[in-house]
Structures are given as C-alpha cells and as structure tokens.
Image 1 (cartoon, one colour):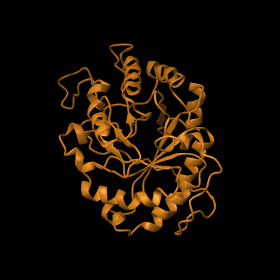
Image 2: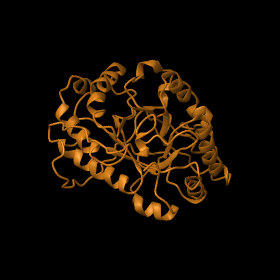
Image 3: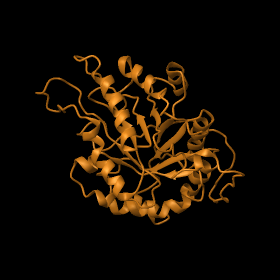
Length: 322
C-alpha cells in the first residue's frame, strides 16, 4: 500500500491484446518438457537467485516505458512487476505478451492480476477456464514467472476464501514448472494487528509483501502525517513470519519519497533497504516506480534516488536469473 491509510493498491491495466496463438483456450495442455534444467529452475522456486543474491527491479508507472528507464540505468531490470484488472477472458494474451517481453529482456516477470469473480468462486472452480488459459499462457514462456492472484487482499473478502482460492489454483498453475505461485500480502496484515496465520498459503512457492516508508511531510500537524520508518520496522515482522512458514520472501512493492530538507537521506534509505534485504535473505526487491494512487506524493525515482537505484542494480549481488 502507498500509505498507512490505504488498505489496498492499484490495478494498472496493461492494455493491447496481442495475437499470440491459441495457447490454452479452455483446455490445459501438457506441461512443457525441458531438455535440461536451466539455472532459473534449479533453486527453491523458478527464478530463485540463490544465497547472497537478490533480484532487483521495479514496476513502472505511466511516466516512462521500461526500455527507456533501462536505457537510463544502463542495464535491464532484474524483475518487472505488472498489474492487471480482469476485463475479459482473453487477457491471458496480454499477460503472456508482457511476460515474454520480460523474459526476452532478462527480467523475471512478476504478474499480479485481479480475478473474474470472488475468491470463493475461483476456489469452487467456477472460473477454471480463465485460470487454465492464464496458466497455459504464462507456462508457455521460456523462463520463470512469479504469479499472484489478487495482490494486497486485506479488507476485501475473507482470509479463508483467499486460502481456498490458492488451494484450488496452485495445482493448475504448478503443472507448468516455470510458474512460481506467490501471494502478495499487505504490510498492514502485520502492522494492523491481524491474525497473520489466517493468511498462510502453504501452496505458495514464495511470499510477497507490499509495504513502504510512508513519510511524506515534515509538518507533524498534518492529519495524515506518518513518521519515517526504517526497513527493519517495515519488513521485520514479515521476515519473521516467512521464516516460520518456511517460505522465501520478496518485497513486491516499496518506496521512499525524497526528504527535501535532508539531501542524501532518501538515497541512504534505499541503500540500507538493499543491505538489509541481503542480510535477511530476501530474494527480490521491486521498487514502485510510479505516482499512481499516491495522494501524498509520487514514488517515482529521480535525482539522488535514481542515482542510488542505478548503483544498486549494478552491484554484483544484483543478478539476472535469465
């Protein structure tokens, strides 16, 4: 979420269906066989960077295209987070198009999608045709795909329905050895005092969390003022929970705004977040490089934050797994 007052996030529709052939179309084909096990399939889950390494990337807002951003930083993103609303059953084509472009440019696609119906309907198999087409489309790309059904679920339906949805969907998705099933949870599941165990998804390959440093103003009298937070304060509890669950953790959305009265502070925060993620064994960081649904100010990387992001993505610990 962008701020502590916002319990759910954006769904950015990536438009433009591509004519990509007839993968899926209601029938689940056999999972593709590989002649040899590629590096990206050799770890705990498809695209696992391994111990002491991190997949470093971002989402991208409307201010810039991914290729233009990559030209500026001098390399491709380690991962690229994309968002889809449900509009029609043929959107698996758009998901596949985005995932294939990411794979071809050495990025791990992180695909988040909203659903054609309530979670319980998915759990009951009422949308299996859609789910099979999505699985077949993403399963046909030659590289790892981290796939989330309904990111930031807190406050929208029930945890029991969310768990049931993943219990039903995971076997369909896991027919394809390149797909890693990854629920992406709100940071406020921990910070809001929820029963965290209610959101435990045993079928997940890894767990994502969306949570930010919510600070945006020096004026402590502002009604929505939020204090500056360290990565330890933001991600410490999700890290502890995922260790209990035995699941790798990645930060699927995060950000820090420019501390305009303290040059260097925001850049230092980004560096510390990277070091903390490495120290704690997180497998990826994906920065929310956008101002979408951010009423208290954009997270778009510029100035010292952009310079720091560029430095971090060129560190030897930042890997491209494909």
